[in-house]
Length: 307
Image 1 (cartoon, rainbow, N blue to C red):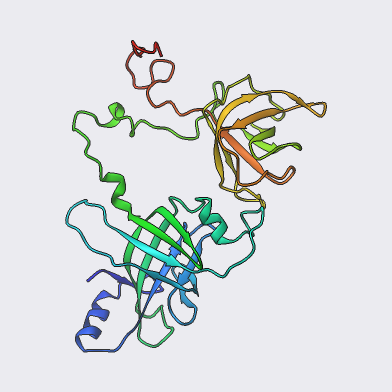
Image 2 (cartoon, rainbow, N blue to C red):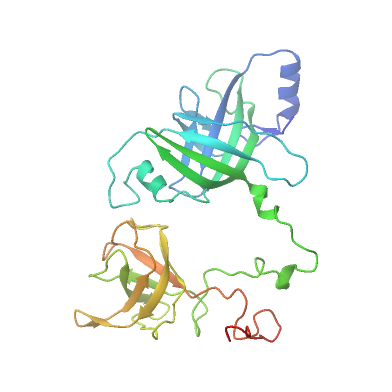
């Protein structure tokens, strides 16, 4: 049996096993956490008939939610399950904080969100703390399907990060995946620069006023080409967590003010809000080279492309 932890953090596994052996009746339910526990936008849901309070995490609200079967596999083989959720319908808006979950799901907003599930053992209906919960499944959202009245997530186990056939001689610094870096500062900086959205921005062309580390800084043309623009989540941002790839970056003058201009490969769901939305920008992540020495070996150009 999996370890059972009470709402106060005590291991109650022996107590639960003894109660089961004595044929004690339990009320069972499943708790679902979509997102990280420290994330204020996370969803705490349960399939029980009333909200349940599990002190280690908080209050799980009643929801129309169900899961598929979960099969245990030997070794590191990845398992998955499906999660079907029917949140109340609300009208779509141009704000990630207020728009419908169906709208966000259709945009792929929940892709790669962590999902955790627990089985709760209740000696009396509604008591999720005395005996507590055992872990049921954990993983990340791999795909999303939106249908009338429901959202279906396919959730891959957290073990999917190790489910790769990697030869023993291509590990660590020689492994392309292991060497990948995100949130890369541009040349000359040790951190990624932060920006406020400047008036006149559209869904595919973003004007930004640099706020840090050097306020008002204008970057050279195409410093961030093939990099990433990521909107911050706090402060009521209407595009918090949404990101996009950058096709080009320049420093034009807009309305008499010089700004940083980022042109995106694909348009955002809606234009950002000037004076509200903020974002940071990452330079392209050097996977195979970094000034010719990223992996500690001399960089040899491709003989066919010369790059």
